[in-house]
Length: 269
Image 1 (cartoon, rainbow, N blue to C red):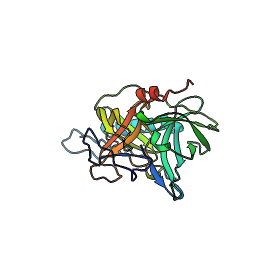
Image 2 (cartoon, one colour):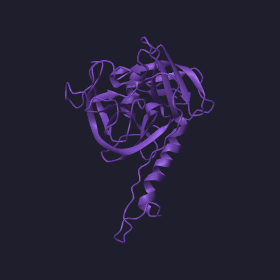
Image 3 (cartoon, rainbow, N blue to C red):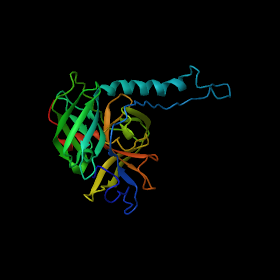
């Protein structure tokens, strides 16, 4: 899978060969990256019981549950988040921007393989603002998963908690660096399971993926997909867009953490 969706043949979704639907989410950027943090939650305002819609400022349970859960999830994962910049070369200076998550006590980082594919150098920035060069210690292109070892882990290493399976309809949260907006969070639900998409580089299909509707965009690749407990249930890999453009229209895909971990052969913590 290439690091820039503008290169190569667009991927296709669900066996719809030839339709430019599925795009990897690494973003090729030139110049400084945006440092703004974005935190997005879902307002599920309910009915007050009086026959009229309750204002969003009321203390009704339905207006506070979703934001409270989303905030808890964000606090749980934020120390484990990583921004990845890979020098992809190829003529004009460029950087493939992606996301990642710390997975063990050695500070190793899991991400999408297409973020760092053929990179000449990789730099990772941790939640505390420190950064370091990193090397690929495990790569599984057929699952679009890679594990990186930073030369200098952060002073305080906070591995994410890796979760289990999900069901259609479960709440889910995506956190990453879409379009260079650091540590952005979006919320949605699991829309489908066991999805198959074709790889952009023609290297076969990605199978068994989680489909979700939390917004993702270029730069989100490699970021964690989370459940309500703040556990990592998947690694974001691609989005689907029937227009052929590189922006989100409601369908994202993630590699389930069970197959991501097994495929990447994570060294023991």
